[in-house]
Length: 210
Image (tube, rainbow, N blue to C red; front, side, top):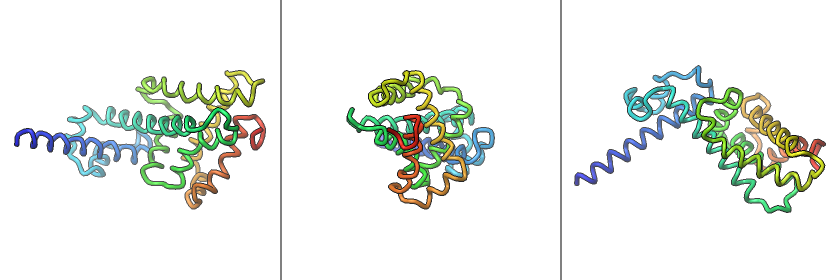
């Protein structure tokens, strides 16, 4: 019985922690870290202010944890999408896989879009803790450079990485700019047809890929 009560308390604590993180991501997506208050987060999560101190220590740590979680979720989705391709995939297919997590979020909305907007905002001003995810950023770029170099043998790795970062910046901009809202009314398929040629062009250095 004691063990059962302990498990229930642990599960309740985890639900509270997860709720605080979800609320933080939603509010960070709307206004950025400087515009979020402790009371807003706890009200949205249905939690006590003391829960933030218990689970995270401070509002700052809660926000940083939420940001890191959003970044990791985005990177994992992007890495997995690209990894699902074989080595014969062309530039258009690479662009589609690279863009898919963002395009899906723009068309589905909800928490997925909140995560992507948080990623887009912090991409402009990286927070503390960014370094913890450096290996995943490097993995994502390294895999893309390797795949793109097959189709663009005359382009240096340094330039390919620059193109990849520019494409990532464009996708982040879509999450925040008014033009991105136009994709919200489109199914994922048509939205990809709009976005993928732009990303492919950034990769290849010419419109519509090669």
